[in-house]
Amino acid sequence: ELFKKQQMLPPGQSKYIVGVELGGNPTRNDFTIFEASFERARRAGLYVAIHIGEVPMKSYDAKYNEALAVINFRPDRLGHALTLS
Image 1 (cartoon, one colour):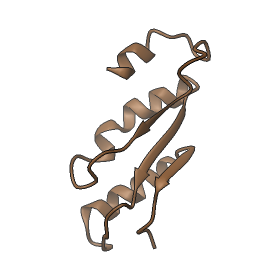
Image 2: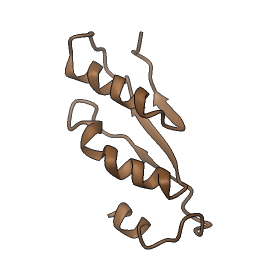
Image 3: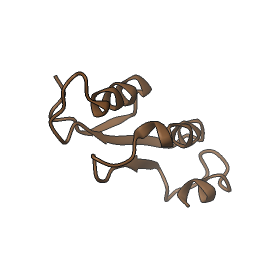
Image 4: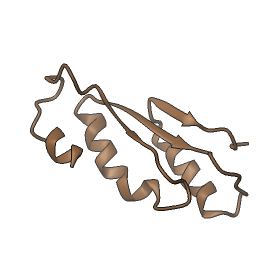
């Protein structure tokens, strides 16, 4: 819903919306589902924050690969990122 509204705003024209964040249950869904939307937000001049590394993971886990995808995306802020090694 936010991304639909964000598309109506000219880049840099909102004094109230300055960024978007992805958080939630770390065992459900995957960042890559939302990556294109977060890239659109970034191109529109919004800051991007993404939460990762909130649950233990191994290098062979899907969540580990998701964490790498988030790091490679280079968000402006990482939330938590506690279990990354």
